[in-house]
Amino acid sequence: MAGLTIIEVLVSIALLSVIVLVVLTPLTGFFGLTRQSNQQVSATQSAQRAMEALRGDWLNPGYYDKNCLINPAVLDGLEIEITALDVDNQSTGTLGKPGSCAASAAATDPPPLKRVRITKTDAQGKLLADLTVEVDRR
Image (tube, rainbow, N blue to C red; front, side, top):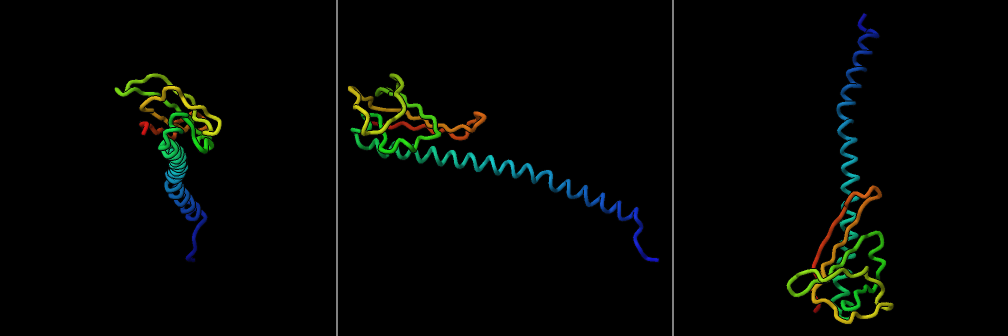
């Protein structure tokens, strides 16, 4: 008779299981890395959109002086830190989070330069994106 014994079938199933385990274990790690990478890309894009909106609005000296945004909702979910700088690039204090330009009053003596730092963290507090740029008063 030319058939397979139960032992041969069990051994081949065991070998197949080991091969599948060796192949699938790294794949689950790759899926986790892909998810983390997607979160970082999304966070960076969100921070970049907010930074570009801020820089675009601040091309108008009145908005720069008021420390405001036309659409402050672009900052939702982001942390922003604005530092006033003097002409020697030295900090002269921190400014608050930009509000709506309609509701903001102009500063009496706006700084010639502002350092803007926008960050995004996940629910566990892990930093996903961190952008810093210096914007001058035009």
